[in-house]
Image 1: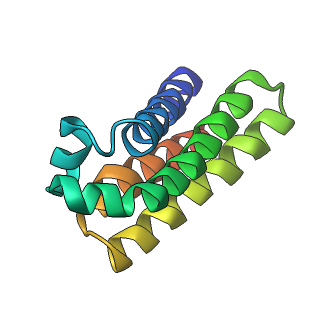
Image 2: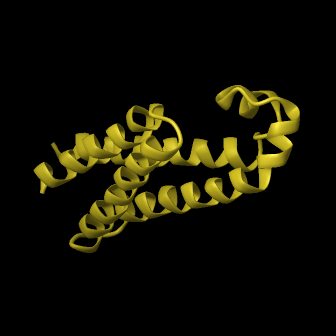
Length: 120
């Protein structure tokens, strides 16, 4: 079960690294605009906000990677903390921005968190 938990944590970290790239570097390009259906003008106007969000997603990815690399008990605690942050951020995003975020962010985080706790 520990291998499954670590794979899930790794996938959530990769997801948040992908979000970082989309929001910080591709927001005004076709892939970034297509993600939210923004036209060029709206993408340009919201780019600073998206870059800020992207940076925070990068912190989540870095924290999850740290949790995978750190020895227990620190690694376990770090994984639990950052996965809880992912779930809370996903729930908040779903409530305030787009309900898709619940499935795209909160659900993978919750599944990984459950696997980490069960594997303990």
